[in-house]
Image 1: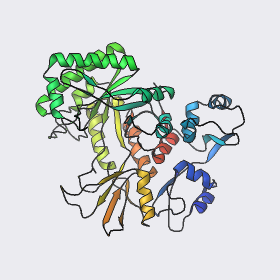
Image 2: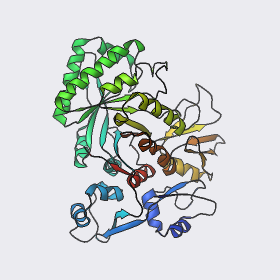
Image 3: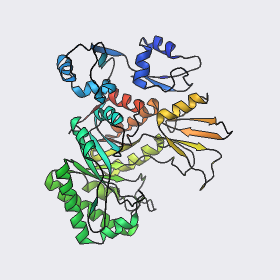
Image 4: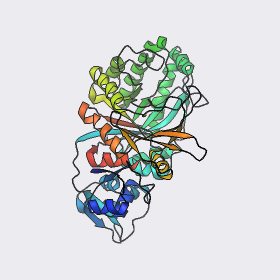
Length: 427
């Protein structure tokens, strides 16, 4: 894949001519929100089809895959619109392979989704995933699970050969992490034992393949209890042949203090769990000062510490799929950023007629604009260029793969990078 960065005077027509592809192909693959008004600094993925197939009556994805000796999943990756369940249309052209695609690594990818995810978005994304983590089961100190409506997502994951992962988090009725819920379970041995058995029963009943433990803001004094809980869960799931995944805060050393970090003991938890997700995002966040959500330099520092104390083959790198728009000036404790999709970010740059800049250190694009009320804004987001740079950390550091928070919006820039450069493992 080639990445084209729009310069002054570029149009969809000129770019298509430059790379000898059609405008329709450019729009389709990038899902361009602004084809008539490209933005200087906007990055566009360029993939030239090599082998194509024109659909005829009676074709199915399975028959086409057999004809070209490829997998149905490859066809779905190369033609995301075909994963949506819409009937094949005679005369439509499918891309079987692309020129110059060189796979640099085989990775596992986990995607996080809420049960209300748009089903078209989910179907387009599933071909790129190994796991689907469904957010989230809660629990009471007495060991009762607080369920979610997960049956349809589990069925769709299985249809696409993706392993469904049950998520567990100490969440209150407002949907926020609650330190007290976790603590009360830790100090209730009977409740903890009941919870573990309820987890196993639910996983076996519903077809879950693993458990994602996402316990954030654990009291430092509960560190031992938290690790003991992970150990007990892992031992029980091992008996069932099920995987244990633990989400960990982004630490750069073992001496970091603070409620978010102290209970997340990288070496000890990494030794127990089958996988760990290092949450290498949220440097830029809703109530924080404007900056990249996942600056490349900060991601590298977290991952370098991670691989120094955890087997790299257990590590999934956090991958963000969202952007933030901050009104300016920023005032700590007052300013609140708006969370938007990466596609929406590009649309806003186009709508306000501003250029996109690129921070080389953070490997992240950003731009400023002034809204109709005269308020200045800054937007930090990700695109195909930033995703290419950040995902290369996985093979560089020998990581198992990555975990995308979250997949509620389809991000063509991310999936073009994955499809062109990586083989996504299935389990």
